[in-house]
Amino acid sequence: MIRMRPTLLLALALVAPAAAMEPAMEQWVSDDSDGATQYRVTADGSTAIGDGDTAVNGGLGYWHLHEPGDSTAFGLARVGVEHRPDTATRLRARATQLSGSRWSPLLGEALLTHDFRAPLYLELSASRGIIDTLAAIDRRWDLRSTGVSLDLGPWRGITLVGGYTRQWLGDDNRRGIAVGRLLIEPTADQRWLVELRSRLLRSDFDAAGYFSPRRMDEHLLLGTYRRPVLGDRWYVSIELGGGTQRVNRGEQKALYHAELVWRGWFNDHVGLESRAACMNSGGLDAGPAGDGYRYCQGTVTLKGSW
Image 1 (cartoon, rainbow, N blue to C red):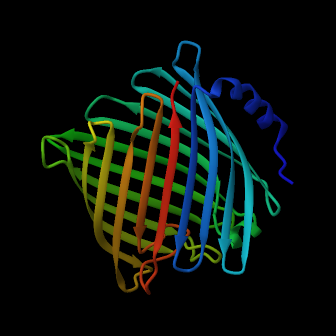
Image 2: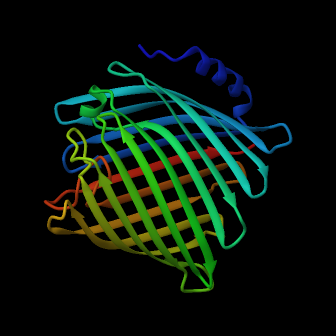
């Protein structure tokens, strides 16, 4: 039986009549070579209210997680709001109620962005989520995060991005994640993008029940080609790259990454967004590179606008 909190059900009921203005249906799937698979299906709607500087949204969905020999599932309901007090600032917040046989947590996220005009752009975020492994779900381990990110640029086709996230996990582990990116657009038409990306993770201890080593260093070189197609109604992006990963000062392992993005509009009212990616590391919580490991995920979103 799927149980939702009365406040969320009431909020969904208030949003639903107007949500047909911008509906969206999304399916997300992931799979890795260790036999762990997930899929999530959601249906959302959003609409502007007031003078148009505020939008409310709500949705329902289903999330299934499978690992060899076991599986679990959640129903979900979510409501959110986005407000733009001016053209440079955006505030977004969302609450999500999960309902499962093992655990039914209330999750949330908030994001504040401000564009200081070039060359500065700032993001501040806070969230509560879950660690998406069955061992962590059985123990009801949540994941609380705060983060800050700052963009500097572009300046002559070069942008610097720096970010730091602090996380508190349900098993009393704590970790910090620093990310640095150098983005270079070598051509004036912006079809090509070269990125140097580094991610450094430091945590209190090597976790059990999910992948989180005491330390991990990743460095990637990525190249992206992107352009409009089919009369500029559609857009395609192809990203390829590789690098290295080192876990707990151990042996350095090779990384690879491949991603395809396809999005656009069939007509003035119906559009599609899709993304598929594969790599030989599951990033945080999933698994490290090496020993033939593979992780793939894909998202397809059918959207509307009336």
